[in-house]
Length: 248
Ligand SMILES: [Zn+2]
Ligand SMILES: [Zn+2]
Image 1 (cartoon, rainbow, N blue to C red):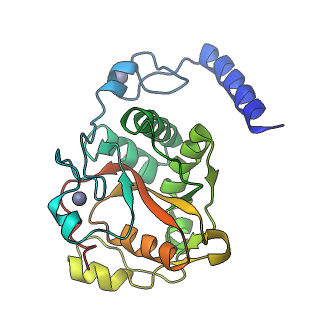
Image 2: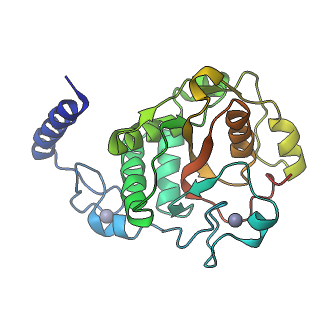
């Protein structure tokens, strides 16, 4: 069965389930749309990351921001359509800490819908690489939230999901509460990539939230060192503040 037939079968099954148990908006309880537990009004109220800098994705109306002109990040473009505030932040929390996989579906679908609106002529990278968790953290959580969202994005956009080309060979301590310099030290050497599969390819590195950018910087640098032709940073949500930890 090819991908199109699988999607038609999945849509058919979801349609039957919708009639038995209609989807309800997670936020307001109104009828959901597109087989999702989200209503149209709440979707439209999701916080756009309006007119972002194309390199660091901070809201900014003047093209590439001064910080990125002076000292650009490793990746060539950032695509982050939402701000990390409610209800997007709640959906990410629901997925990450309560394993609500419907939230991954909503976030993945919303990312694709906004991608089409904000970047209508965007050249699609060839590979979608979810930001890996260290295996001990993945075992503890039971899943990788970035990968859970990226699965829906890959299906929506017809992209190849490549979750095994980038990994974390060693344990890194939690980044919470560390200064920029401490984060850089903590993350150095944290990633490894399969060069034979990455070399010459255009890739999108996918994460749920980008905060300081330290983790994304280390991962993107690893992919470029492994021979990737172009790396874009894709994420659902951008928290406020500059990419303080990623400048060289
Ligand atoms: Zn609603
Ligand atoms: Zn910038």
